[in-house]
Image (tube, rainbow, N blue to C red; front, side):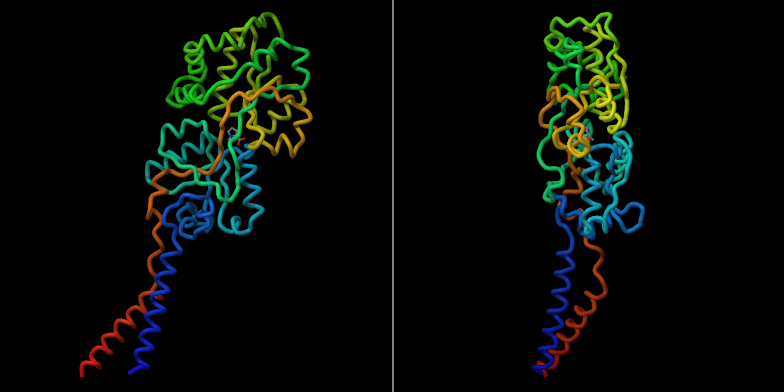
Length: 337
Ligand code: PBE
């Protein structure tokens, strides 16, 4: 009798602990980066069925991609569970849009300012793995010697700085279908006083064309188109150079590009600035936007409690429970006799 009772208790404990462990293995609310390692989260993010979860990235030259790839390659626990997909700002946002339409799971590399935060309900995963760190700034960089051989131009670009709501207005208009140049023109028309303070008494009429470099990220398209119009208003001819990030730094270093308003420093593009040594070959002009941020971002519905259900309870959990049930019934009957 006592023996049967002990066996029953033992089985019950096995079943109970198994059930508890199974439930604990799943994330209740996905809020921080470290939780991406949970197996249920990995499975939900494994769109191509190869056993690895996917993080939808952008162009491989972006600083934030460099940081993410280095982190995953350098951490076996992550490389065993995740792959980073290369794409572009434009392609990543199409993937994000598709996921949101279908309530699907997705993790993207995203940053602020970006129009996607106005269009979708999105959440930054808390950076509890020290992936990206603190807020960054957007910086104007020039080729060395621009300050001495084109001082007027240099003075003008050194005065350029604006706020999130400014860049956001231009970005959103472009995203909603306004042509890039028109969206920039509308902002310039709405902000003539600001533009005048940047231009001052600079007159570039008749001087050499200005080579302005940028990368095809939404905010950089917006800021560069505004800068182009401002320079034209000051009398300059402007040639835009749409290039990959690596070519932007190289062009500034070798003088093919006069300046850019598209650098994210000191953090995001430290792979170029510090690691590749461009800080010794390029002139840091001015911070043109404060409080820029990069991160891993999910649609907010993925952060709701219970979004990640544990995999269906295994038979290993049902069987002991059934055994306990049967035994208990047996015990009760025996007792009553
Ligand atoms: N970004 C957008 C860039 C800078 C601007 C954050 C994707 C990057 O280098 O990561």
